[in-house]
Image (cartoon, rainbow, N blue to C red; front, side):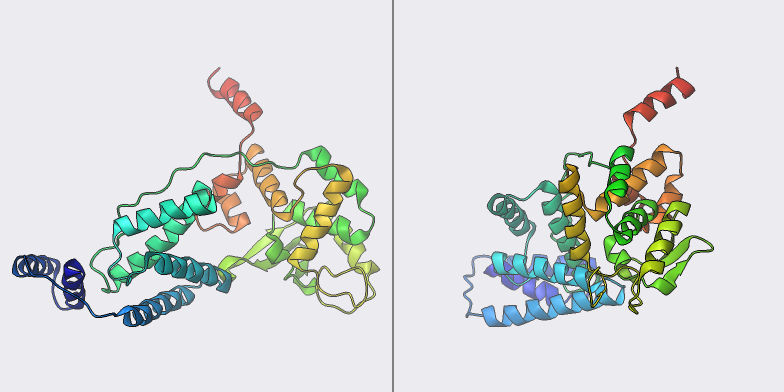
Length: 329
């Protein structure tokens, strides 16, 4: 309790003293209170409101920076779960508290290292913001380093699988849908927001709004253009959406509808793990294999960081062998 009191006093002087003065204040408090017993009244309610206020301020700052509402909800749930489990004011949370929390979370939830590192990154962002805004002296996440995880090579579709899916489509919509996913590398969340007027058939391109409402242009091939035009010409509804349900009232397709349709197609063809994001990974891998500069692929996929692009693009071993023969052997 004594250390909590010292921390509270130091926290309260953060905006008035520099680092050297804060250190001196902490040393004086430590000497003065040595041997003194400190007791506390129940202040959980005050701590709760302080935690809630600081969390809201952090989320407001992320909203201003352009974070999507989906990301903000994930941040909020992650931070609130940590605060509830640790049971302290955020201004009193220490590194060991977070280490214990992450360890227990992984054991209880059987979570992967990737999941735990995602939680660590969110907490790091939160406490770094508290530090920058002078609510705490130093982020307790500073000494918790990135959690290493094994690199797994995720599956992509083979050329044969893609052609098999195209040949097995029973309607023009599904054929156009598969072509659109495979030739653009578009996110399914971006695809369902597209309207017919967004498509520029002359340039074979369209504008999409990605994560954080960031606008970018994606491109499609000649085959996709033909199949998409055939699908749109066959429609009799007046819905402006690019892809709609087959039955009246022909509502805009949602993410769940596309995922269900692709799973059904995959099961009927005995193709494992058919889902929209796999088309995106396939395009990235194919582009890298054919020599597309990774910076251009990054722009095409709409990634902020090039590291994210490289996670999608797994270079085939056969190409590594050919490159070795060309440049070394």
